[in-house]
Image 1 (tube, rainbow, N blue to C red):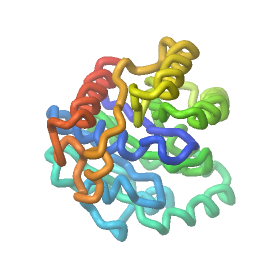
Image 2 (spheres, rainbow, N blue to C red; image 1 turned 90 degrees about the horizontal axis):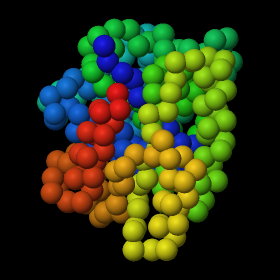
Image 3 (cartoon, one colour; image 1 turned 60 degrees about the horizontal axis):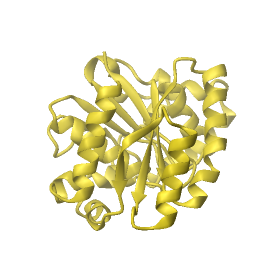
Image 4 (cartoon, rainbow, N blue to C red; image 1 turned 45 degrees about the vertical axis):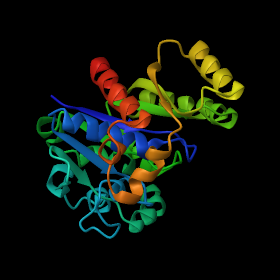
Length: 252
């Protein structure tokens, strides 16, 4: 039986999509069937695995009740990794969903047999706590929270944890936090060291041991339409994401 992970943080630029793409790629390359679902209207995860932004059908069709995730999944160049793409049209769902009664469960209703077909399903959330992220959290079994090791990244954690508690209480009691991953980390700076220490002190059971370093190759990879593990398998970013994928799998 597979597990559905949401990669969520309402703050933008903390490495959600990069983390979603590279965890999914690492797990797939290890031989486990994996599905990446792009829930961000910017479609960065879709582009990050080599597909165009105008793919049809897309995850928008799932939210409209016109198919399940496994039915709309398409293969990528990475063996074992399928993707349900996003398009800019998905931005309309943020307006449309709140008008529909019970819209919070649309994605959960569209899971179909995803847990039977894929060992890992990774939901890449948009940078907000709006309807798309709520749908992901209601559909997910576990959530991974990327945290950039800078001061402002800490400020939004309380809001996110409050939202997770509300969804656990009202909509998805099985949802648990798989862990927090420190991203874009520069261990040479006092700020990076201070933020890492503070997060680990406040959430000692939740923070993954793996830390994702600030790395040029990680930033370059999306422009080539591949995960960093394909762009430069031996760079520090690739090695860190491979280690993180193993750690996530060990906590499953």
